[in-house]
Length: 288
Ligand code: 13P
Image (tube, rainbow, N blue to C red; front, side):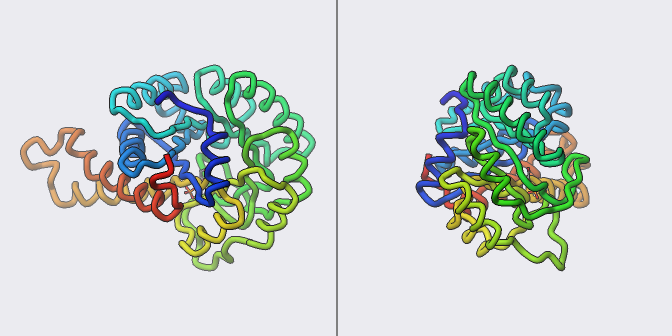
């Protein structure tokens, strides 16, 4: 199946009371592991690409080519959207032109009026091409790709104004942060999430910082309207751990163990296991 917009994927998830994982990809192994797992579990999936990962992989067109090739040659039939994560205005425009099927325009660090004006313009450009749009209100805490957010609780009235621009799904700060959660983390603010849901109506909501949120909080967030959950750090951690174990066990020194296809295999398997667990907890298995 060709890449699709994330709009239909997330509206179906919202109506079905489950969430679809948006997994950040970093290279071929990551992309293949995520696609194969989604196919095995018959789950829709979003492959998310930060601007930093986009540069790392050689540029957006390279990624579009790689992902389209994998979908065709691995016979991936579940719905897949290729999504820009935390895009700038220019990055979102480039991704729309390169063949991404979904973009996040993140103007949450800008004065609200500028965020609003730029979100409107990206909606216009994206929708002309059938590309779905995510916008953000209230920056997500933590650090991602050099972008540091302070972690806010989004203002429901601002969420409503941004939702009214015609975006397809909305990310809003509800106490979530990127990266590892600190010991003293207060947890998600369900009060804020409920107020945002009440203000914005039917638009699917997005939960960033999906690594390390306890399962009961994930389930409650889904009950309250979250239809997309972003996961990045957890895959990076399990990949690094599996690769470290391989090397510490001296396996790269045995026979042809230094071959990258062998060296990177435990990490890829670990990503598959992490993605499998997310699909199961988020409830998107067998929803393709
Ligand atoms: P984590 O790295 O905390 O999983 O967050 C991912 C994310 O929100 C990407 O936008």
